[in-house]
Each structure stands twice: as C-alpha cells, then as structure tokens.
Amino acid sequence: MNSHDITYETGNGKTQVPAAHTVDLATCKKCHLCAEICPAGIIDVDDEARFLDDRIPLCIRCGQCMAACPTKSIFIEGLSYEKDFFELPQREKSWQKAFYGLIGSRRSIRKFQDRPVPRELLEKIVQAVTFAPPGFTPLTVELTVVNDRELIRRAVPLMAEMYNMLLKMQANPESRAILEKMVGKDTYQVLSDHVLPLMRVRMPALLAGAEDTIARGAPCMILFHAPVHNEDMFIALAYALLAAHSLGLGACAIGLIPPTINRNPELKKMFKIPESNQVSASMVLGYPRYKYSRGIRRRPASLTWIE
Ligand SMILES: Cc1cc2nc3c(=O)[nH]c(=O)nc-3n(C[C@H](O)[C@H](O)[C@H](O)COP(=O)(O)O)c2cc1C
Image (tube, rainbow, N blue to C red; front, side):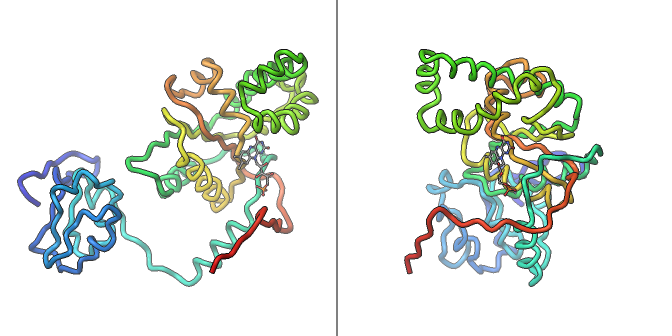
C-alpha cells in the first residue's frame, strides 16, 4: 500500500482501497498474469508488472487482474481485495452435471403455493445477479425486490388498464394505425397475435382483480431497471431465473409487466422505481405448486457450424 491509499468503513472493519492503480513490487512474483488477462492491455509485460500511465484511462475496472493475481499485489483504484473479491471454491468435476441438470430442469412457473418466500432466498437471487457479466462496471442494473403478495395483487388491475387501452386502440382502424406506428411493426404483430387475444378474454376479470394472468398470483416479483435500457438487464434476468430454480423456487420472466410500470407513474410509485428509470425486465417467483415429470427439448431456429 502506498501514500495514495484511502481507508473507509465497510461495516466489517476498515478496508484499504487504493486511490490509484498500483503494483506492490515487494510481493509481485512477476508472473505477468495480470498483463495477460487485462482486456484493455494497460499493464506492461516487461519484467516487473507496471501500469502504463497513458493507458490507465482505458481501464474498465473489471477487476480481472486482481481476481487473478496469486499474491494480491495489483491494485485498481477504488477496488479492495477485502470488499470486492471473494475466494473461489475448488473447481469440481460435478459442476458440469449439476449445471446441466439445473438448466435442463428449469421451467417457467406460473402457479404458486400459498407460501411466503424467505428473505434469505431472495438475497441469494440478488447475489446471483451480481455474478452476471456486465458490459461495463459498475453495474447499471437496479433491482427492486417485491416480497409483498398483496401489493402485487393490488397492482395487477392497474397493469391491466394499459392492455385495456391497447384493446380499445386496436378495435378502431384509425387508432390501430397509430398504435402500429407507435410500437413498430414487429411488436404490433406480437401484440395482435399473442398478447391482445389473451387480454381480450381475461380483461373484465383482470380489471376487477378477480384473476391474475399478468403476475400469475405470485408472492414475489423482481424488477430490473436502469436509467437507460441495456443488454445487461436480460443477462441479469437469466441469472436470477436460474438462481431461483437452484433454490427450490419457481420463477417466470414477465414481459407484460415492464411497459405497464413505465407508462404509469402510480405503478412506478407503488414499486419505488425512480421516475427517471425504465423497467427493462421483470420476473415473478414463489414456491412452485406443481412438479414436472420431464424436460422439454427445443432446437435453435437454425444452427450453422463453421469449422
Ligand atoms: C423476455 C421474456 C418475457 C416473457 N414474458 C412472459 C409473460 O409476460 N407472461 C408469461 O406467462 N410468460 C412469459 N415468459 C415466459 C415464456 O413464455 C416461457 O419461457 C415459455 O413459455 C417457455 O417455457 P419454459 O421457460 O418453461 O421453457 C417470458 C419469457 C421471456 C424470456
């Protein structure tokens, strides 16, 4: 550690956080792993590891150099070994079997037991999201975990209102043309082929709060939001869906929910979504009511090998 270091409280005691990119040459073993791994090529590979001053602005703070260094000798400004890293378990042969067993047995769950989800399981799902690869750090995904069945139940008729408005627009040729222009041809196709026919049948019961084909009567919901939508949101969602399944919970991505929250300030307020944020993805979850006897085999729309 050098004189640039700053110290701050983490809650578990004091942690050293370097205020600049540095290498502790007293402990560096000159293995050059940091330089090999750095995606931005900002570490010199000659003899001692050394940050190239003019390239430091290219650092994306992915932390890979610190994750790889066997002697904890490399420091990225603002990252601390104590706070931002953890020791990895030994790689085990059983991981492959467990992983394929896990992803092959996951299903989108839409029927739930009347049983609350313990907070510690939801915290584990949040942790899984933090393991997802971000385009850039720090993470842009903001999470809202709603562990309140009653609040979700009250929100569903408000969510349905947006689809009721779309049904009305679709019924009139003039407003249908406006709708098509507004959402684009492809989204309109999905709306008119899949979403609106389902909504048409269910609408009276949805508006009355008598049934829930949107949030599926789930006890919990997780919303993925950010000031600007980006691809990280769906990777985060995928990690959360798999994490829920690994924990014995059932979950389902719900594309119907985000646009309803984004267009309704009341829903944004109910779910404490900052006004300036857009909800990109949502999932509902709880204990699954039913068990499946088999997995489902699907094939990619096309598969090309080039070798
Ligand atoms: C981005 C996305 C949005 C989805 N939106 C909904 C939805 O609004 N309502 C719903 O019931 N299922 C929704 N699903 C779940 C799919 O319908 C589901 O993945 C599909 O039925 C296949 O089932 P499986 O996950 O069990 O393989 C969504 C899935 C994804 C990936």
